[in-house]
Image (cartoon, rainbow, N blue to C red; front, side, top):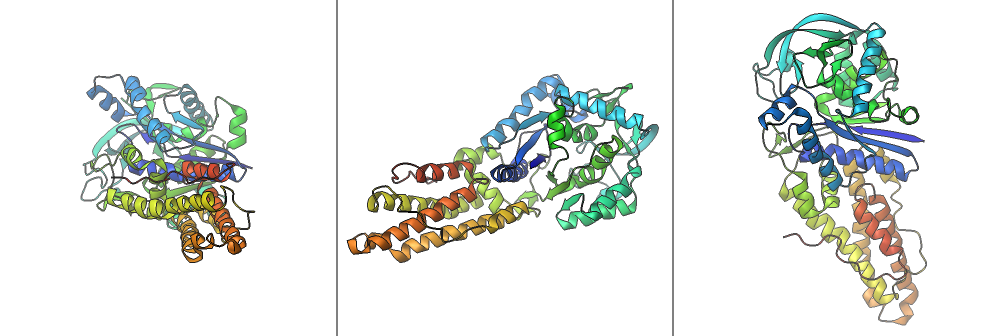
Length: 475
């Protein structure tokens, strides 16, 4: 069994923020669970490094675009390493195999008769690096960037998207191309029903990008360039066996604002090149701070590295997956992560592991009596994670933690230990708790890999002794 999962690649016009982290952690949870389930797994993330906007940022810093990209992509790669993401490749759209893949795919699409040259006039939003329509605007402005798009007329190469919309629609309706959640599936079907105009796949006068193989005056439109990372990053040009093994992708995990690109344009590009469509797209909501979308343009960003430094990567991962129902928008703040850290983590899980290891050391010579079955199998957690109900899965695991803490309070092992006649009952209590906590650790491993590993090591050691606090107090 194989499993191939991707995140959206991040545009390098700023540093990573907590909104980027949300998508990346969710994807990592799914990748780690797939590996635990015995699936051969490939997890791809990366950076989107071309386009006029990047050239402008580089110029403002007195750098060539490539030098700027080489400096800036590291912020993202380092942030994801700090969050303990288990990606198999970090793809860059400036990687040589990506450049070669883009050229190869577009040549195929042209040879297959789906590209033509024409003049185009449209409203261009520099913030999006995309053309918008009148109905996308609010009071004449781009709703996300609060800027007025520029009316541009230029000669481009166009792609016949409409040739593939019926095929895409049919695959969605048959469930061969899944879109989650259901509201976005309906939205995509509605867009397809309205009819879809052909799109420009190139732009003139944009120097920083991939030139069209047959027309050096045109640069591949940054969105088309970026989408192709999903095949270049898994060996389309550099490792045919790898590509054959993992394509099609099982899930592309993306923000809800870019589903049109991922659910219509990307499948159409693949079909035009004679490549199989991905199996599905998951669209998540926005993170907000004080009820406003977190974005570089608004300036209300939260640096994930700051929270990781203060609370640890597992606590940040837990908070992002527990606080918000995936697929919906959710508000985040320092107060909220602090409350989760103190309540759920330090007082809940941390306290349980500390109490139990202390009691095993004191009352059972550091050995768990013969293990019995845990009180709770937690078998429903797997299905919750696989259906993107991360917050429900964690709430369910915390029910098992709460039960164990309550069981300690009710059975009072410290009292049982006072009388040798209670040895059998004490052994049973410690054994049930040991089994429960081991299972909790295993269930948490996709979400909180470091904590899960600490719990595993403690319970597999020759002599169990009281563990250092898993979640030390944060001032």
